[in-house]
Structures are given as C-alpha cells and as structure tokens.
Length: 168
Image (cartoon, rainbow, N blue to C red):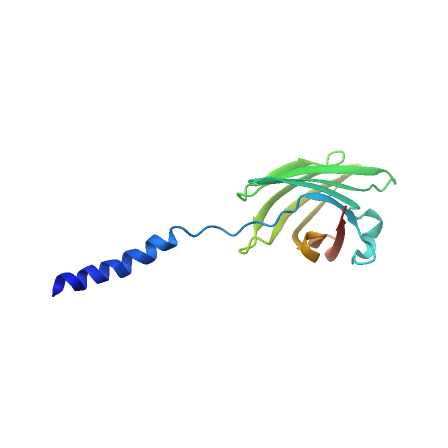
C-alpha cells in the first residue's frame, strides 16, 4: 500500500516541476520604428522647445538602439545615440560636448513596456549639471503610438513630461 502512495506523491511533485520548466518569458513588445513627436498629445512643460522630436529605434533580441533628435540651445538639430541591452547592464553614451549619459533598461514583467533609468552629466561651457531620472516606454493604438513618460530630478527640482510619438 505504501508504494502506490509514494508513486502518486512523486507524480504530484514532479509533474508541476516538469510542466513549469516549459514556461517561457513573455514576448517583448517591439519598439522598432521611426517616431515623430505629436506635440498636441504630449505634456512637455517648460522645456518643450528642446524636447526630442524624432526617435529612430531598432530592436533586436537582446538590445535596442535609440537615436534621438532634438533642438540644441543654439537652435541646431542634435542627434544622440545609445544602445541598451536587455540584461540590465549599464550603458555609457557621449552626448553633446563633454556631456555624458549612463543608463540601463529593465523590462516590465509582462514584456509590454520597459523603463530606462539614467544619470545625465551635462556640461554647459564648464558648468556641470547632474540629472537623474526614469523613462517608461509603452506602446498604444496597436503599436502605432509610442508613449515616453519621463520623471527626472536635478538642482532645479523634479519634473514630469509625457512625450507621445506617432509611428511613421
């Protein structure tokens, strides 16, 4: 009588472990595309003139490359590039002049959005300014709209912006 009980117990313990071994991570949303800022749907605050107007993103199975075009304080177009890996490792990018950015990406549990945690070290002609923040990227309208919510902190205080981009 002990053998059937032990056999059933073993089946009840091993079967779930076996079945769970075949579960996979959720599919990640695909953020690849050329995106143009929709100012009418965005909440850009006092720095609207310097907001990223164009994002070009290319996503692979293990990283995303992001090119952002905005207007500099001198009124010229400036494009910054960064590549973030999906393993959460920190990425270092050079921005305009001596300015730098350290950032890392973390996917949401459902794989439908991600957050970029960053530290900007901006150089304005020898004057240093540090900004730390988090961007949350999500898609809307069946992938036709990119929403980037940005929460940042600097010596000027805390700031929130919401940038909405239309896929081209």
